[in-house]
Image (cartoon, rainbow, N blue to C red; front, side, top):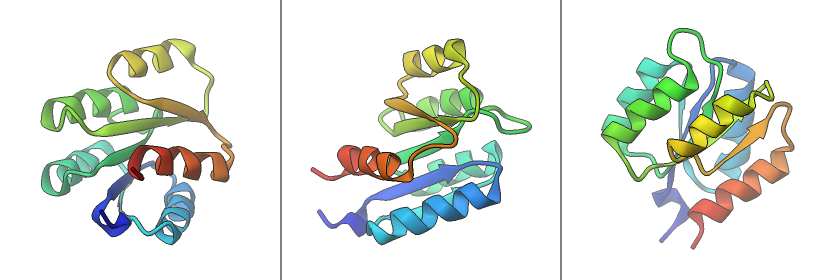
Length: 123
């Protein structure tokens, strides 16, 4: 399967983070979608069924855990990697219970994140 067949959704309210991740993952050959908030993210999940979601924990309006719960009801098998600027272990534990694969604390090492995405999507 070609990497262009693999879809990644980046959900973060920070424009700079979305652009950075899009550039890095675009170079890896994935099809990228971006969402600045939960409503947009869930619309993209419904319409495009991404293979992997990079999901920020702290988003105004609907937080990462709430978005993750909704993703689970729409597409239960979607892979999710959480991103957080905070070391909130209880939230990360809850995200893991909800099926998040792993998490990265901002500022994260972009190469580590890229490798984690590749590990999940390249078979």
